Figure: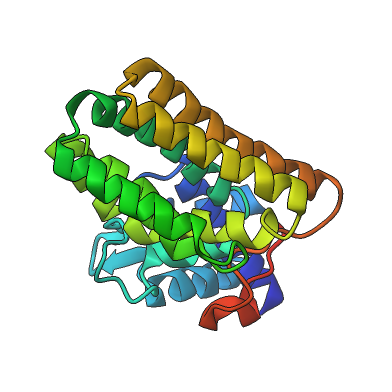
Length: 251
């Protein structure tokens, strides 16, 4: 059983790394057994487990294929294949932060250029709510602040893309709150980043807004990587969330 689970994990990693792409036919049991150095019975058990979770799908007479996994959206219950792979694979958190760095940097640039008076009011309210919230439990206000900036970009494609990834992006914020905010120095640094992003957008400075927003996400990623390098497991969620009982990973 443990061997089959390890093989399932390795196959998921191939999917996450792009070695197996959505819609691609899986190699045969014989090929996978040779490639991974296990019996066909183990491969069969692993494929069955992945099929049960929706990661692959079996078509009668054609074989097994990597499922075309739809990104987690606002209506997700948290049990989609992509969400499960996020929860189970350490590196995915850093992949998501790389995406956040680029997209939120561009959103901040556009918000500084295009925000209406109403947008600026909403960003201000979101920033003030973030500042007034307990920093050890403020994942939702933190995410709302960044979301207000995204919406002020008035780029419907950008808004749609980040909305489709809302729950996954929120998990990166939760990870930041859980791992960085308990440390006073890191918490103060993140607070300064938020203030600088806010002021740059309010001053309508697109280039500065983009640069600071990207620096903020990069700081979060690097700080969590440093924690990991020191031998401490990364928590995926703050201690006050219902799922936190299973939140420790080797990320």
